Amino acid sequence: MVANKVELKSDAIFDKIKDRLAENPAKGKQINAVFWYKITTTTSNGAPVKHWTLDLKKGSVYEGSPEEGVKADTTLSVTDTDLVDIALGKLNPQVAFMKGKLKITGNIMLTQKLVPLLKTEAKL
Image (tube, rainbow, N blue to C red; front, top):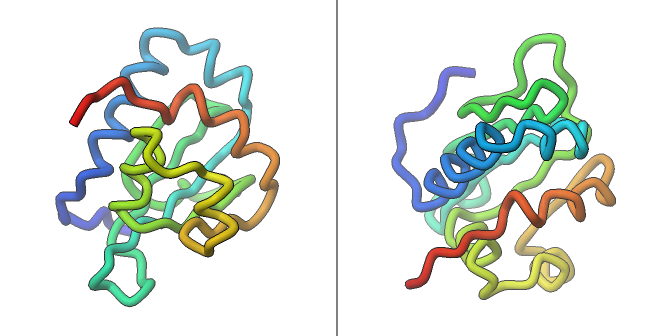
């Protein structure tokens, strides 16, 4: 899939994850899984407007679907706004999941390991 050139607020979260993995590659290796994010917007009627892949087996984060031959262990679908709120600590991921704001397929338990990479210290 060709990366969509839509600018989203959540792009900064993935950039921060890239930085954290560059600083500490062992953190990604500890998780050792592939996560595929399908980011939607409130105006996209549930259709993804952007995809991000966290290939923590290889220690890479990139915009787009998983590379050919790479299978996502966990797929997460979430709106741009809700992902930002989760990263800022304004929205509990479990609450988001229970309310249907965060949809997860695959190995749901792996998402617990993502919390340290996803959290941001940014203040709004």
